[in-house]
Amino acid sequence: MSNKDLAVKIIEFAGRAENIGSITNCMTRMRLTVKDSSKVQAGEIKGLDGVLGLVGEGNYFQIVLGPGKAKKVTDEAAEAFGLKRDAEVTEVTEDWRVNKEAVKSGQKQSSFKKAMNTIANIFIPLIPAIIAAGLFFGLGQLIGTLNTEKNQMWEGVRLFFTLISGSFLGYLVIYTGINAARQFGATEGLGGMIGAITIGANIPALSKMLGLFNEEVPLKSTLTTGKGGIIGVIIGVWILAKIEKWMRKRIPDVLDLILTPFLTLLVTGLLYVFVIMPAAGYFSDALVYVLSFIINSTNPVVSVISGYVLAALFLPMVLLGLHHGLIPIYAVQLDQLKGVSLFPVLAMAGAGQVGAALAIYLKARKVGNKRLQKVITGALPAGLLGVGEPLIYGVTLPMFKPFFTAGLGAGFGGAYVMLRGVMANAWGPSGLVATAIMKPECMMDYVWGLVISYIFGFIITYFVIKDKEVENV
Image (cartoon, rainbow, N blue to C red; front, side, top):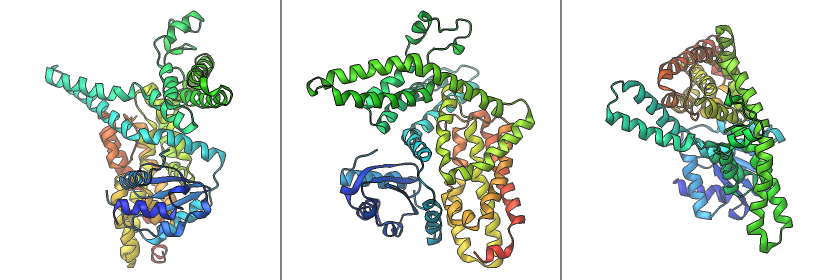
């Protein structure tokens, strides 16, 4: 079935185009918001060739298609039906789809989870740019380090790569403001302006006039350029959306185009610069301080323990959908530290799953469970490349114990990565492909962390799981 045919079938079984409120995609899933969930034929969608799973929560559905395919099928659906937009797929068995649906259907869409989904939807469209900018930034750093003779050609390449990376990383708050406006229902251009205010050149001058600027240590000022960062922008744009909607209801139509954006920005701008930026700035500073204490601790015991715990607990967070709450933390680190130290630690969780799956494969071969061998063989390549869903829902979670032994094994890799202070230039896919977005001096330590997670995930699972448990799966 072609991507276009699959897109047509999915929309048909989702109640046809008139039932679709919005459509978007993340790295592995098509995300649909429907008007009437009773019209969605979940069983038919799950049975389509190319669909790996379906998660439904109220009027919100996530159709698992796999990396690359998710975007292609979503694009085909959006183009074919004019829907509003808010590699090969690994073969799996019906067991994975059923198990995933059973797990996810029991999870309620709480206010907290809705907030996490909103945050995810703000940043997911930015991930390709984040990865590309991180790669260009890292390559620029590597060239600068190696080009000790200041060769003009290589210096030109470094400047060009830095130019490309800076076009995104230098204006991340603006992109965040635009996407946040899209999610909160505000005018996207106004959201981008709120983001731009954050890095505006006049902020220090205003701060000095009001006595809020610290001349000795500018970064410790109550108000200065960049204060509040990503967190402040999201809060500011949320308030912008509220004010803009309030204005539109009260301003006459003939004056709406002129007065609504002007008054909205005036009110929001005052609140944003003099209230939200300082408050969010203190929160961001506190967050970075706590993270620095944990992640950049000079005490090796603290590093080892925190790295182990974070990596070991990450997969249960993914299972509950709580991992989306980490995206603002990644963004704060990237904005303030020009790198992300939390992501490499958490990336070890997927490597632990790979090690656990290898151990189960050997036992499955020993006891002659060919079905389980086939599932693992199909899912392992994706797992090595950082796509963990086939292994989680097809292998480790249905068996229960391996899901946790994998986490216990991943903790050792997390401890090593934390101890070595590994930092990434961006965040995105984990696994081996994430090596490219690590800072050059951290690449080998990141790979060693993966190897350690593979080994301990394998060892712990191999000795905890009995042959009979594998034979009866």
